Image (tube, rainbow over the protein chains, first blue to last red):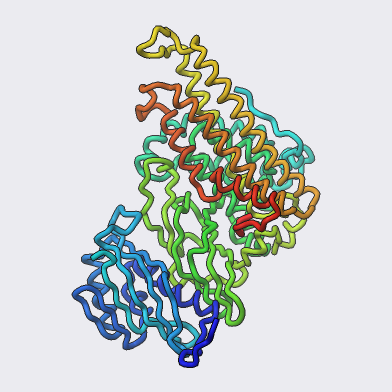
Length: 140
Length: 416
């Protein structure tokens, strides 16, 4: 393997597990329908882009999810598994995942709900936070 | 049907009863035979609630209470907490008797023996807490689908575990998470969490083993003190953090053979249940649209029942060999070779395969009238099919693993 001079950062195995665990934090926050925990995954000025939704800052994300957990997402679960991860320089990385919202009674994400997502993550006080999240339907 | 008596190693419970050690706890320690009788005595109650449990996707509270009252959750609990410390052969006996009466009940009970045993590997003061009441029930997992991050005095765990049989009635869950240490490589750890600290997600919606209530559980930023965390590798190797249990035969064994011996009785019992159901109906059954007035006289039936009966014997051979290995090596305190570990899983897989084949023969010979919901054999056939799909119980996976090791290759799993 060759190392590039433009991107010397390497993710340790600990970093990889910690970054991947952000998906588990979202899954857990979602299961509890806990908008605060969901928003806490993000940086203070983190952004979230979903179809028809653009949110900036943890407060906006929290308020949106609090309403969604009482509305469109009520009773649902979410699932997401990493499919790719790369360092973007020191203290930053990109995580790609696939998953989606599980409707009540679904054990697998439906064709219409399946998404792929990009997570731009940054190192924060020894851990990792989500700076930007965006997803797109898996199926055209 | 006769009850199979334990062979080879004697149940520790029996020894304790004989020497009166059990009496010192103030609670009589029952023999293996007595425990089998108690399991059999539960049959009417299990029948009564079977449909309710299926429809409500969890065991009825009265069933769990009766199991507790019968001591079924004490089988692997240390004697100093009022437990019975029975050996693996007794687990096969009791699991089989429960399985013969009700598959879901047997599954939940047998599954609880595994995390219950794991709890006995934790430091003694942790066990004091877990077994503060002797009928403590544990549920658990072998899937590391959570992350543990270091925190002052312990770790903070976040994640979700699927297939947590018995979660509704458990006091504690044994969890597995990948620990990310400040320095060094991440590694999986075992932890103990009070159920009140976990969220149950009611996602158990199956047409089979529905009554096991095998829901998902979730931990969200859950603090677990350092004492309630153990490296999974230690448990896989049979290393014990308990000073008191470290020399006890039943607690010095690697996890997978112990887990295999704990669960396999359920399959043996399901095959017995299928045999019971078949022979109960045999005298009155014709072979429809043929000249056979009774199925009992058809040579095909003779071939089927003989084949199934022999498969049951073969299944039991593998279950007993597995349990005997666990028990003997526990008494000896000897190291497990890789081949022995692989064979333990192969024995479990073979018992599942043969048990399922026996059930399938009885089910296939039971006619169209056997598919009504009130007929046990259709349910038994679905249950043994579902169990055979378990990632650690699948006959093919276990055979392949054993074969790999016999060929001198490394095992392709850590679950050995």
